[in-house]
Image (spheres, rainbow, N blue to C red):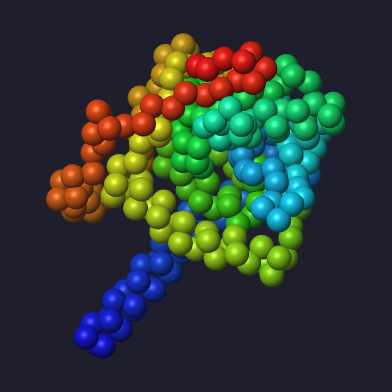
Length: 263
């Protein structure tokens, strides 16, 4: 039992290290750490996060993302901001909060679009492509989050680059770095093994700088894997039977506090 336990531990470490190296290798060249060097793209995608801390006070990661988004638009490095976040109840609305805070720093309404169903990094990126017609995008987030976000974006076929917020030390963000180590393993399983789908898509919405043609692009036009690997994964998927049950899928409805309506 001890030998089996040790072998399982070694295997888990190898899988975790391998997954993290794969994500880093695929994405590190697309991340810019200095905002002044971020190249121009038509859309800047701001990932939602909690705007408050459990112990009180404002979430520094939330503020850093908004500060960077405002700088990029004011400097002309992005033409339009897509604010994507969680709005699963009428009492918690990340996109509206981001919109209000950006208005306070003179970002015009006309250059902001709100995505109320960005329940996760995967959902946000899938919806940016399949609902909002985004093909080229700057991802606005923290240095520890961007590798996973870019990995998903590349999987979905987006021409994406990451622009990192002002750096905090690894000591300050140690729990987020540790979380990402395991999240990168999970995202590989979600994309290549579990055949993950977003909670909610809905009708297409063309951004002012987007290239949507009024029809939703088919989901999961993913980068193909080598045939033997794809065949093995298909066999594993069939054994796991991971396809979602249509009758049991969650149907989310987003609440807009401005119009006071559900859609």
